[in-house]
Length: 357
Image 1 (spheres, rainbow, N blue to C red):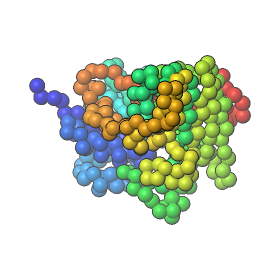
Image 2 (image 1 turned 90 degrees about the horizontal axis):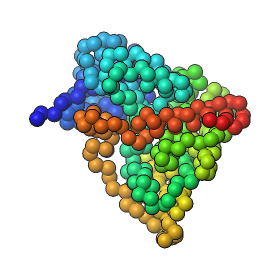
Image 3 (image 1 turned 30 degrees about the vertical axis):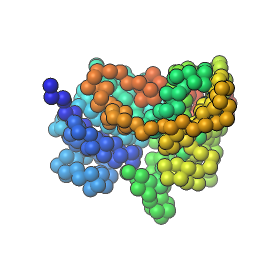
Image 4 (image 1 turned 90 degrees about the vertical axis):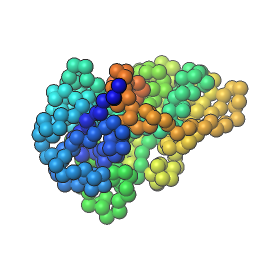
């Protein structure tokens, strides 16, 4: 039986990850990139040029894009504070939706997004770290019981800053960064800017995955207050669970980007269990393990991921093909707990006190 070709549209280019996701769609053998849309057409030019997207498939009005192309799946990359707004705009057209991280700017908004979906349609929150081999291997080892019950998770996540790289991780110059910074939504509080909202969800969502979906009891957060900026560039969050403490740290301004040269401290996870520990650094092809039986740390290979779990487009198309539910960080149950922790952290940093969930 001939398998379905899935029509995908990309709407709203606020986040530079849109270019990466469109490239994944174009490279999928059973995906047709039906159209792209942004209210500021100039923001689509780089993707059109680099990916060879015909001009007739670009639209400045999302409604025209949806009505003319009738996609099965829509990729949304709006500013963090606009996720709910854009899901409510696009969901009535009846497509499955993939929203680039974070889930939302608030738990209330996240729940609104879920309710807005058309009956029988899938909402997926893409966390790019789910497609990193080391972090997947770490979860496999945790799930196997190798280190026993997970008691603590530490995460350090970040990069030099959100404006240092565009689609496909192409680096920008310091001059370009300086020119873009004043007008970028990443640096506007009202648009969901700041390192905490940009990166904390990675740690809290994958941390929830590693801890089997368990929720913390309370959250304490502190953020820096950079001169001349209205958003943070550094946050430290401690979550207290019934079984122990976990720490999640976000940083814009690391010495180097982890996908080129790991900075110090390294970006990634350390997971401590009752019977051992695992360290999993971003983009490594191995994890490091120690157990009671083998207390001296040793490497365990993290093989490259295989289709259909190499990237979010592959994964979503496979799940839709098979009618199977989403699992892991991209699923709503895990992402929602991650969002709940982020919400508590935002309140804690603002009120300067511990927040009970």
